[in-house]
Image (tube, rainbow, N blue to C red):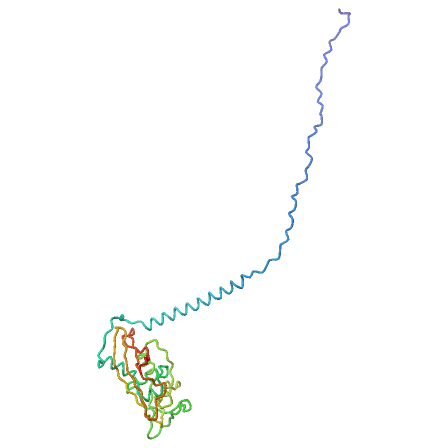
Length: 290
């Protein structure tokens, strides 16, 4: 019922009130950085000195020494092969005529007489120089003088030009040529006085300043009561080598005997064909017989 009162329906307008509610963000409490526990510091033990180091140094030194030795030995072997090599291979043994030109030529190069044997029987450098000197052709000698001749260095030889003595001479290259012809291209024998013993055998002094061998004078040409018999008994060829066998017998008198170094027996001379097709004198060997 309306009692005259206007009942106004109050429309309650509910206004949406925006209420700002502070937003509380869930914050994660900051976590302190995780620090890895520091590793324990290791105390290094003092290093022991290696006993291997001196040993290794020793081994290295030995290896170096061996390499040097092996290299030198190899080079020496090569040079020896070059020296000994021959253009002709060794073949079957063949006996040669003792009176043939080749046999007589080789034998005359090495055969010696009793005076030469008394002076020296060794095939050393002095004897090689002497044997090479014996091969020099007569036209290689010429008259000379005594300049720079040292008499003290070559007793008993002297050198004074007189009416009865004029020294002969020959060039040093002449000697070297004969050495190579007799003993091979690789022969290295220094120029020196041509003298064996003190019995006036040889007698040419090498004077380097002149590049010549100059003859000395010796008044003591000795004689001897010793005798020797030598006989060439065999000559054998193997294609690249020739060997000569010589039977030797030394003798004295009722009151004298030959010195011990004069040995009777068989002597074998060996010659080898070199790359120049020249038979060179290689060795002299003794075989006891008597």
